[in-house]
Length: 292
Image (cartoon, rainbow, N blue to C red):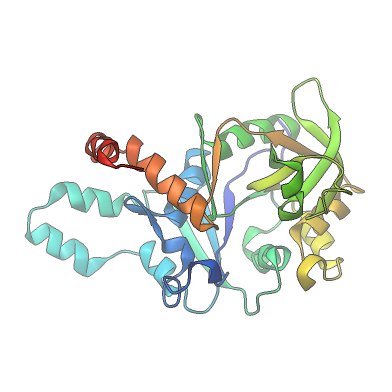
């Protein structure tokens, strides 16, 4: 196995303002919006944990203390539950941070883009490969998407990006990759462009919110001028990395919910509620009563 092939750290950029969900996000982070009974950020952390990742690094901003509190010990809550002999709820609360998981938090002082957010975590990542998970993208698969990617990374030992085929008219919403299919089913990337117009998009393979990156990405991000939207784009850093080492795209097996949009958030709520062990059956019965 390549000496760099073990991924044990994940970065969660969670400093965004969540303006598309105002006023709900005026005082609460968008990553703490619940899908049924878990906040978006917890779904992403559980996905990383399922891939064997133990070190969780959150790049936060102002008014994001709720995220830190969620992954901290809730002494008062646990004491109340213990006094009430609510054993199942105590176990549920403690399961948010299972034994062996470590959480660290770093501030992104200015909203300068996803690339800049990743760069803010460099001193915590160090000289080793790491995952990046965007909580806005709630991704469901079996095995979980990040576990699929970690398996690919163990084999390749190079940066790998989750991709999906998107409608041509939507290329301006995604980073778009073009490359050559390999015998093992991944794509070796030749080109990656941030939010190209449909008429100039090199393909329809759009980047989803999951990455495993080698530490060489940090120097590449630092070398980039501001890109699309006047921000320091992670896509531009990956484009620079292509000149130094191979980068692969992986068409994951599963489903992505764009919970950065209201429509995607509602779709995830309904579909995951239908799959929920506690409320799924009764919720399905309720939906059948609706006249649409």
